[in-house]
Structures are given as C-alpha cells and as structure tokens.
Image (tube, rainbow, N blue to C red; front, top):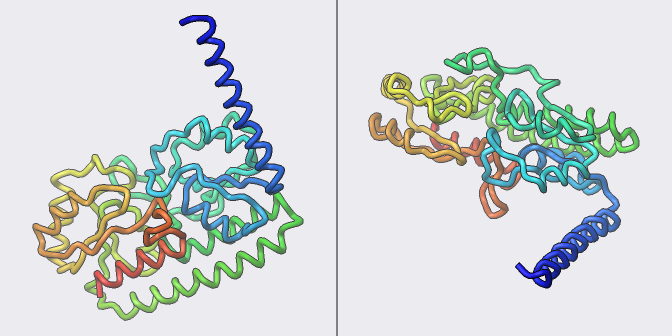
Length: 301
C-alpha cells in the first residue's frame, strides 16, 4: 500500500471519528437529559412509563433478541458509559451483566434485589431462581414500585414525578390483573393447565392458580429429553388440555410434536424475554401482557 493511500485512509477514519463524536456531543447538548440504560426491552418500557420525557431510556438488547446469552457490543459499552444508571433484572437472567458493568462507573439497579423468587425444581437448574417475574401483571406492579423507589433515591428532585407516573401506570396494570384473575376464577379447574415450551411462566401460574407444565426449564431448550417429552404428552392426554403454547424467541417444533401426539391445538406464541417490533402485537409491556393473556384465554376457554 502506498503512503498516499495510507494517508487517505487515515484521513477518512479521522473524519468519521470526529463526525460521530460531534454527533454524540450535539445530541447530549440538544436533549439535555440523562440516560437510563436497561438490559432488555421489557424493562426499558416499564422504566419509560415511570421516567416519561424527563429522561432518555434505552435498552441494550433489541426487540426479538434472546437476552440470556446476549453478547454486548462496543456500542453497548459506549452507551453504558454515558448512562447515569444501568437497570437489570437479576436472578441470573442476564448472564453477561456482571462482566458488562464491572469496569463502568455507573449506578446500578437490580430489580431482583427487592423481589421474592420462585425457585426452579428441575435438573441442573434445581434451587436457582426463575428470573421471569415480569410475566405476571401482579409482579409487574412490583417492578414499577421498585423502579420508582430506586430512581427517586438517585434523583430525589424527581420523586414526585416518578410517583405520579408510577401510580398511573400501575392502574393500567391492575386492570389487566383483575381481568385475568376473573377469567381464571371462572375457568373449570380441570382446564387450569398452562403448557409451554420454556418454564418461564412460574410467576404467572403461581399468582393466578394455574398448573405450569413445560418442555424444558429456563433457557434450556437443548435439554429436551424423551422422558420429559413423554411426561408432557401423558399429562396433556390425561388432563385433556385443550391448547399448548410456545415462546416467540424459540422454535415451536418440539411443542408441535406434543400437539400431533395429543390432538390438542397449538394456541400460539407468547412473548417472554423481548417485546415485538413496533408493528407487532407486543410492542410495549402492557401490549405484551394483553397479547399473552388473550392468547391464553382463547386457548383454555
């Protein structure tokens, strides 16, 4: 490579770096708002409803992305370095988060620090907390309380704003909670079986009186065994479970085997770890809960 070509490349790189740096500085000056960074889209949406327009709220993972084994990028680190607080779920959900924040000077809120877990009682995961507490509207209300309290401690001048927004948001969650509670109350007891691909619905099942059945424990799709498959097929036949479900970020191929073996119908895909794109049915946390509960109601009713 000639010296002239090398000089041209270095000049272009310097220009691009300077332009991007200026854009970042310009954006910060223009918005004049602090950044709250969440580990995944569901959490970011809950925070946005508490913080509203007084803060910029971003999610590290994008809609539709599997969160458990996500690998942060250099741009994620840049965003994190500009945030005043990083919010994650905990309970082992983001296995990458500890390393991610270890070298960052950023405040941290871990939701699980203030939640009572439901423990997994299956194989390798036995004794570990199930991380998917937000799937239950009742626990979602607790998420709001934790976020309001934690953000208020970091920014006391905004406490009144956080509390007001939190109450409005919790009222919306309470309506979904009441609707689903009424549905389960009126559902025949022999129909109260929620059969899914992943064991991600323990909190929902526990809070509303459903029996949870699944093909694999948390984030363990590769652990489907003939024994577990046979157990699920047997139960679905015995209890005459009308519908089976799967999750949007995994393949429903294994669940379709159960469908074909039992004659139960496939009720649809539920959203768990990630919101949908804007045009999808679960582009907000409220939308996700409504979508999931409507799918379950149609399948089990």
